[in-house]
Image (cartoon, rainbow, N blue to C red; front, side):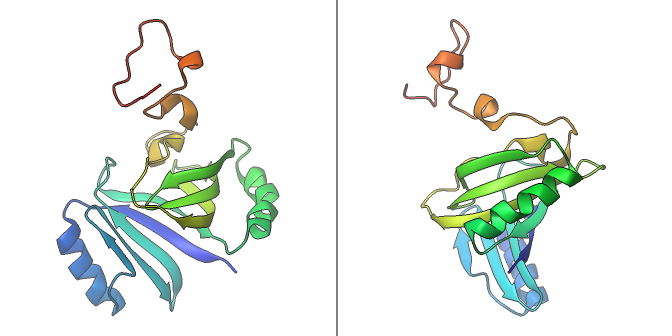
Length: 164
């Protein structure tokens, strides 16, 4: 069964948690220093907010699915909507590790369809797909992530966050 997903980038996490807790009539199911999430049943929605490196406003929309089979079943529908579909496996983001597909709508809004594999203790990296709505040109996460494998780096490229 699908759950609608909305991720909003906010400036003041505490103030936003207060607002959305009153609006939804519920406290977040997960709170971190830079992130909060409500898993609501009425309406069935995964609503997340964060203060991570994205412009304030709608970060992306999407669908959370319950199984890997359901995720694979969405692939043809997503590809038909946007042939530039990008697949990510075991992506670490938003305190979770997930398999996911990304597409973008005609206005440039990124849509994430994902199956959560489990929680992790860190936020991870935002997916740079379509620059979260600021570009209609897909980017490749592996090439824009903090640590690009040595074999793909140009000579003299320094990436201080890399250990390899």
